[in-house]
Length: 262
Image: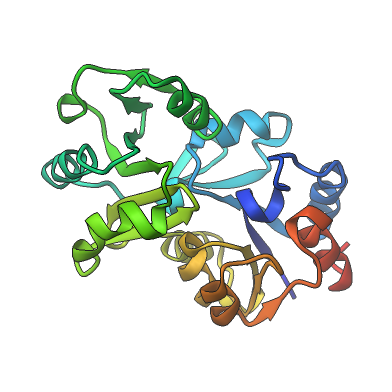
C-alpha cells in the first residue's frame, strides 16, 4: 500500500510552461482521504514552493533545494547545509564560468551579486526570496547550496568547472541551465529517507516521480520509482518504471489514476 508520494516540480509535475495542471487540486484531497502523504521535491527554494501551494501548504511536505531543507507544517524536518569555506570556493569558481551567474541559496533567502536583467528574470522563477548583495562570499546565513545559472548549458559548460569536486560534494545537473553544488549528503534521496523515518513509511510504501539528474537518488529511495517519459536518459535507466505520459500530458496524475490510488 502506498503511503507516500514524492514528486519533482519542473519537468515532472509542471508542464514546460511551468504550469500546474488543475487536476492537482482534486488529487491532493483524494490522496489525503486514503492516508497518503504528498511531498514536493525540488531544486526550488522553500519560499517559492510554499507560495505556489499556499492554500494547502500545511498538508504537503516540502523537500526544497534538492532535499537540503525539508519542512512540514512550518517545522524543519531536515537540514543539510554547506560549510562557508566550501561555499566561498564554489562562488569564486562560479564567477569564472562564461555566460553563467552565481546564486547562494540559504535558509533565510537566496543571494545574488549580479543585476543582469535576463538572469534575475530566470532566477525569479525559482527563488521567491532573493537579495542582491555586493559580495556573495560575505553572506551571513545558513547556506544550503551554491547554484549556477548557466545560459550556455549546465551539462556541457559549468559542470566541467565543478566535476573534480564530485567525490566530496554533490554536484547536480538540475536542468538545462542549472547546476547545484551542495554538501555530499544533500540530495532528494536522503531527504526522502528522513521523511520515511519520521512517519514510519518504508521504501515499499513510497512512490516517486522525477525527470532530471538531481532526481537520481530519489529513484533508489522507493520501490515505485517513476521516470517521466520525457526524463533524462540516466533517470530512465535508474527508475523501476516509466510513465506512459510526459509532464505536458499530466503524466503524474495519469499514473496515480492507473495505480488506483484515487
